[in-house]
Length: 412
Image 1: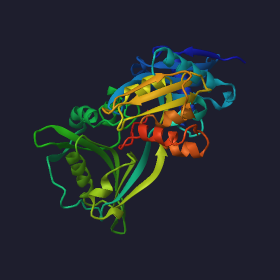
Image 2: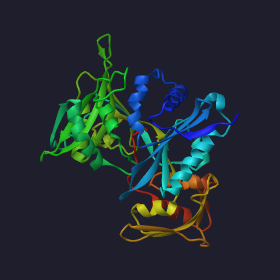
Image 3: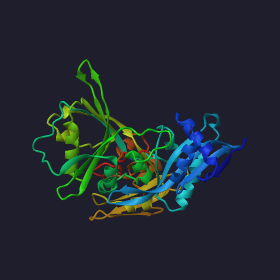
Image 4: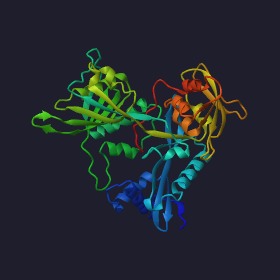
């Protein structure tokens, strides 16, 4: 039976079938009520929703929107992809391939240089030219052993505040603390996180909010956490779950982690999706008070226009690299490019057909390293990136790499 691929208008009745398929595939135990559907309609007004329909039944979903992606020294527009589902009864019919290809083609036509997503599984998106561009790590802190170095200055003030007050300062702090890899947050994301808006039938978690304010009165950091109280035979096993910690200055970072490390009646602080270069261990007198968890893939990127993407960012060293990009999954990024970076860190990347490439690599590999992270060396060892001139692979890796790895902790 042929399927009908069509745009889903958020105001239409088809949104119900669309959301029912999303809930079914992602095993969401919330019923898709009319009230919940209506509550979501405003969220999707400026987004692109596509569904694959078998009659009136939605069996595949895809959602995307344009967002601002922070890159080293600047930003680009990115095609953010989410809500990708295929009903189990309709797998192996090319549903995902059709949905993905159509969205990437439309993004390329709009002149968007890169598509991004958060992957539910790690083996799906490489076939479409995606590569892992950012990673995260979990953090576990033994509060009883975690003591900030006494030499670390105490600057500004820390206050526990209501969610509404934290909401007032959070966007400005987030903007000041953005790292390469970060994307915009929707207003409803902020409202939901701070407990100011909930879906019908949901109960927001009890979350405590803390704000750091600099000596000049400028809010420079915030955090939010939940507490799981646990006493076992008068032994304190209580765990604090850190949901968010953003700091625009080193002083705010130290102060907020000091607050967590000095909580009474707490055994452990746990946090997921933290930067892989978390500075906390270096702040403590006992480095073993912190355990950094497994390194996990987070944001996946798919370059559509390498010349535009690589020209939009800044670099930490001068140099020149000529690379050939292979793109069998669409061909948008295929070609030979020359990247030239001056002493001022500004780079210009142009298509240079016929130039002798020092490196040939798939678009997925370049998509994983273009932002400053990843491991181009490993791609060479795996035979994915092929070096044509001695030292060309190391030279390209050094040119792209940044001292601060890209990061995003926003699931979308």
